Image (cartoon, rainbow, N blue to C red; front, top):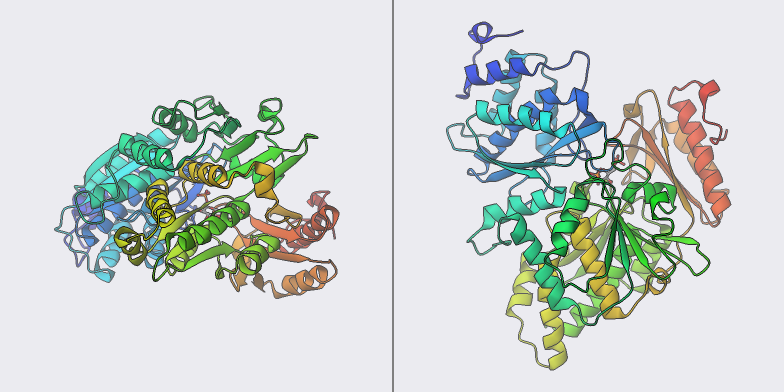
Length: 564
Ligand code: G16
C-alpha cells in the first residue's frame, strides 16, 4: 500500500490535497487484475468490483465541477436494466448531459491506477490537460437506484468527495432522469435558462402541470405500468399524487426492496429482448388496455398491448419515435411559424428498417443514424431545431434548440388554431425531460399524443409494420476483439466474420444484420431482421453461432439454438 509517506518524491504540477486523497485511496484499494473502462453508460460491472471506482469517480466529478466554474456535477449510481448484482456509476454534466468523450480515457486511467501514487499522478494529468484550477470550490449532486449494493458505493463516493473538499447533495434513491433533471435545474435556477424548481416535488409538478395543460378528454382505457421492481415504482407512486385523480393507471412489479426481483422477468429490456408479455402481467393486462414497461432506473420505456385474440404486440422505441415525430411535424405546421424549426430524427443501427422508411419516406423527415449510446444520439439531435432521438430499446427524448425555444416563446399566433397549438408546444417543452431519456416523462408524452390523435394502441401500431427482428447476446472471450465502423453497422474486425454476415444477409428477403460489442456488458450483441419471423430468427442464430466461434469460445459448448 502507498501511504502518504511514500508519496513524498511525487512531483505534481497541480496543488491537489495529496495526503487526504492518498489516505482515502488506500481505504479503497483497486482490486488486482481487474480492468475498468468508462463506456456507454459510465463504469458498469459486478457491484463487488466497484467501490474503488466509485471513490475515484467522486474525485473526478469534483474536478469536473472545478473545471465548470464550480457548477454542480451529477453522479448516478445505477446499472439500469442489468442484473441486480451489477452496479455502475456515471457522471452527469451541468446541463444534464453525459460526460464529454474527451474525459473518458482519463476516467479509465484514473480508475485503473494500481495505487495511490499512480492515482495522484493520473489526477494531476487530468488537471493539467483540462487546465483545472484546483483552488476553485466544487459541488456534486448524487443519487442511486434501489440496488442493495448502492449504499456501500455511496459511502465510497462520499469519501472521495470529502477527500477533495467537495460540497455535496445526497438525493437518496432516485431515477436516473430525475438526477439529470436535478443537476440541470440546480445549475440554472434563477437564470434565463431556468429548467424548473430544483427539487423532486419541482420535477413532479413540472411534468404533471404540463400534462394537465395538454390532456383534452377523459380516457377510460386503463394503462398498466410495469415498474421492473425498481426505482420507477417509487417515482410512479409519487407522481400519481400530482396527476389528475382520473388518470387510469395500474402499477405492476413494484417490489422495490425484495431481493432478486429487479428487472427479473419484467422491465423494458425483458420486453424488448424476449418480445413477450412479462409473466407477472398475465391476467392484469387485458385486450384493449395499454401496457408499458420501465427499466431498472426508469430511463427506458416500452409500450405493448394484446389484440382481441390475446396476441402480444410490442411498441418499442422506434414506434415511440415514429409517433412523436409525426405528431411534432404536424404540430409545428399548425403553429404558423414564419420560420418553422427543422424537425429531425436520430436512430441507431437497431432501428427497425420499416421505422426508418416510415420516418423518411412517409413523413418526409431528415433522419441520421449514429452509434449506440445516448451521448451519440443526443449530440446528433442537437443539430435539429426539434431533434427526436430514440433507441429501439426505448431510450430517448426530444431536444429543442435555444433558437427554437426563442421562436416558440416569441411567436405571435394569428388565428385561434395557431394559438391553441402554440400553447400545446409550450406545454410539451415542459412535459419533456430533455436532459436524457426519461421513461416517466416519455410515458406522459405518449399518453398525451394518443389522447390528441384519438389513437388506441392498435391504431398507433398500424403506422407501419415492424420487420421481424431478433437481438441475441453472445458471450465471447474478449469483446474488444470486435471492432466496428459505419455507426456500428459493419465489423472491421474480425473481417472474415463481416464477410460471412454479408453473404448470409444477402440470402434473406429484407435481410439486415450486424454484430457489435456491448458497451455495458461483457458480451457481443447480434441483431438480425428479415421478412418473416422464422427467417429473422434463423439469420440471428446463424450470426450468433459464427460470432461465438470467432469469439474464441469452445464450439462444443455453443448453445444449441445457435447455428453453423
Ligand atoms: C445504456 C446506454 C444506451 C445503450 C444501452 C445498451 O443504457 O445509455 O444508450 O443503448 O446502454 O448499450 P450496449 O448495447 O452497448 O450494452 P442503460 O439503460 O443501460 O443505461
